[in-house]
Amino acid sequence: MEIKLEMDNEVIILKLIGSLVASSAEGLKEQIAKLMEKKYRFILLDLGKVDFIDSSGLGACIAIKRDLTATNGILACAALNENVRKVFRMTRADQKILVFDARQEAVNALLERARASRP
Amino acid sequence: MREPRKLHLSFEPTFGNVDMVRAAVGGICSDFFQLGCSAASVLDFCLIVTELMNNAVEHTDAGVLDAEILLSDHEAVFRLISAGKGFDPTQTAIMPDVGQDELPEGGYGLALIQALADDMEYERQEDRNMVTLRKTFPVQAEKEETE
Image (cartoon, rainbow over all chains, first blue to last red):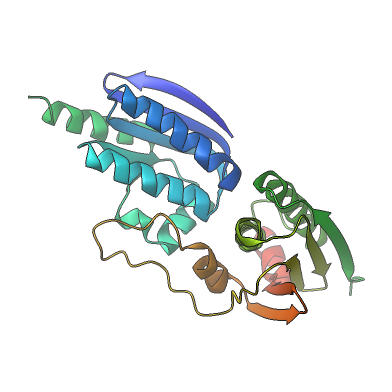
């Protein structure tokens, strides 16, 4: 799985391309850990090009959300295809992780929260 | 009526190899059942075989996993054979509770299999675990939708 990084002000966008599965989940978590070391707290996973997810990939998203929440950060996921959305729905992860239909909608929501969190 | 097909794969228990077997299963099913690769039933089948293989990779003592894919007119069967301590995945698995503050990171695989597979059987022969998953493919319904 390929990961492309982009930034929009305080929001880091990780565009994932390929399958988010056991063989790629650790790599994603490592990438996020590096970003969190640099104090990035508002992270968007753009899943528009993710064709397949398994429970390990989902677990990675949950772990990332947990770690970000612990530092007052926020994780959002956007542009899930039908198959990926189904896994989120069946596991009820969509009730705990912010999910948006469109990437820009997610970016705007995270920017809003980032602004609200400034001292 | 089409001739049933059977394919046998042996592979080292790594997640990379799980990806390759999944790709093979998806391609074979899409072709045999004449469904597009994005058809929901193909993806469901790919998910349950992936979860089963992931479980074996994590728990097996063996240096090799054996998989059989059997395709007949309206059904796909995936059988995974692995050596190691006994583990019965047909025991009821409950999807982790969303009511608690944080979702657990794991524990979803078996629940997903049980939710999506039409049937799952487990057999232990000597020191080998044999798990069989079955999935029905709605061939006629898919054809009607595309017409």
